[in-house]
Every structure is written in C-alpha cells, then in structure tokens.
Amino acid sequence: MHFTDPVYRNPYWPTFPLLQVTQGCTHNRCKFCTMYKDVRFHPHSLDIIEEDLKELAQVAPHAKTIQLLSANPLVMTYNKLKPILELINRYLPEIEYIYAATRVSDLKTKKVDELENLRELGLREISLGVESGDDWTLKRVNKGYTSEDIIEQCGKLSDAGIDFWMSFLNGVSGLEHSHDHAVHSAEIFSECDPMLVGTGGLTLFPGTPLLEEAQRGEFTPLSEREMLVELKTFVENLTCDCYFITHHTVSASLTGPDFLKRKNNIVDTLAYELEHGDFDRMAQIRKNKRSL
Ligand code: SF4
Image (cartoon, rainbow, N blue to C red; front, side):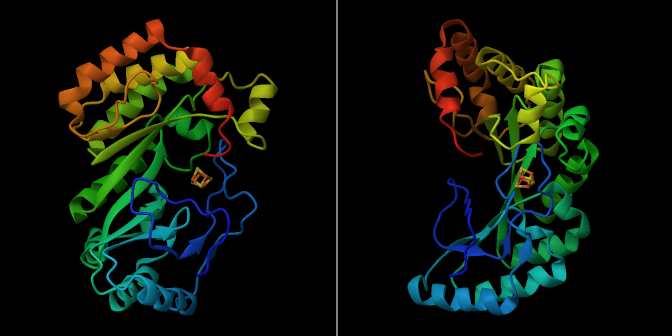
C-alpha cells in the first residue's frame, strides 16, 4: 500500500481499509495547522490506486466501507474521481460506504448531478473541517472560504443526498471575537443541517502562525474557562438535530445522537463544568496534545 506520513484517518469511521488517493493538503495555509506542512500535495495516479486496490482485494475482499485519504481527496475533478470510485467498486464489489474528509472549497467545482453520481458509486459521507461559520474568524485564520461558500456547498451535498459532518474549532477566533465566532458558527451550522456536528478545542502547536501571533501579542488565546463559555454559547445557539460530538468536558460524556432532545442537558452540564470544572486538568490535557 502507498501511504505518506502523516496518515490521519477519522477515528469515528471504520479505520480499515484506508485508501490514499492524494497526499497532503492543497491549501496548507490554515494558521493553526502544521499537519501537512512538510508534505507536497500530490494526487496518486490511477495506476498506483489500482495497485493498492488489488492488494485490498486480497486482504479485504468483502469490505463494505473504505476511507479515502488524505486531507482533501475531493479536490480532484469529477472526471478524475469517478474512475477512482469505479475502480473501488470493481475490486471491492461489496462496498457500500465510501468516506472522505475534504475542504468546503473542494466542492465548488462539482455540480449536484456529479455529486449524485459519486453518491451512486458509494460516496456516502463527507467530513468538512469547517471550524467556523463566522466570516471574521474564517479570514483571520486563513481558511480560504466564506460563510456563504459553506452554505452553498453544503446545500449541494444535501441536494445530492450525501451526508456530511461539520466541525467547530473552539477558541480559534481568540478572545476578541469569541462570542461572534460561537453565535455565527451555530447559525451557519444550523442552516446547513449536517448529520453530525463535532467540536474540537484549539491547541497552539509549535510552528503554527497562530502561536507566533500569540507570542507577539497579536492573538489572545482563550483560557480553558473561556473555551467552555464559548462552547456553551455555540451549543445554546445550535438548532439543528444532529449527532453531537465533544470531548471538552471531563465530568460527563456529551457525545451522542438526538442533539435537540439532549440540548438542555448538554447546556446544563456545561454550566456545571463552568462552576465546578477542573480547569488545571483540562489545560494539562491540552498541553499534552501533539497534533490536531
Ligand atoms: S486544517 Fe485542513 S485545510 Fe487547513 S491546512 Fe490543515 S489540513 Fe489543510
């Protein structure tokens, strides 16, 4: 199999088998991310992909799922993606679910009927590292798209019947814009109505422009308490029913389906954490993180 380090795969999807169809990230400019800093973006040739699929056909001939790598495989044009999905179906004929992470901007080149065709070929679930729905924040951290883009591209996924995830990056706007980041993200996410909303907390990793800005006093990171306030504001304003994932609290797991039924309970738990949370422990957990 042809894999290029770092190999990041979504742990909530079946992590075997994996198929790398691109390496690195075409954007590579988000101010909080160094994941693919040293990796040149490169799409794999159809020959290399076929070699890997022949190998998978030997070891996992009955595979029903497969996860495409790396950061944004769907940046490839429809005309390049279609033969890849056809190959997957030829070598793994029982495939039902093809998963991929990608960037919002990668969807701009795809028409709804093309997305529908990809869905017919098995592309069922896409994870979008949206991070924010707030335009000031998106520009501040150089995500490379706007809230209008998010709404437009997620609308195409809904029309094509492809399920999608949206992630909220807690803390990424810094203290000066925290409230707007939470409220505007919740509004945009609710409008897009994803199957799943996941939240992660910003960690300032060495080598990231955001850490350098923080060291120069140009970016004010949130304390653990302020992160929790922002997360609570986001949850209070989120109105779409979805599976909801967060790992921010230590007193109770807030991850699960039926967000709207659980929303009041989630808000109450976050309020409890704000009163009684062990913020030193939360800071220690974040300090020990090594990558996104
Ligand atoms: S966060 Fe995602 S889109 Fe941004 S540079 Fe990192 S891998 Fe690329």
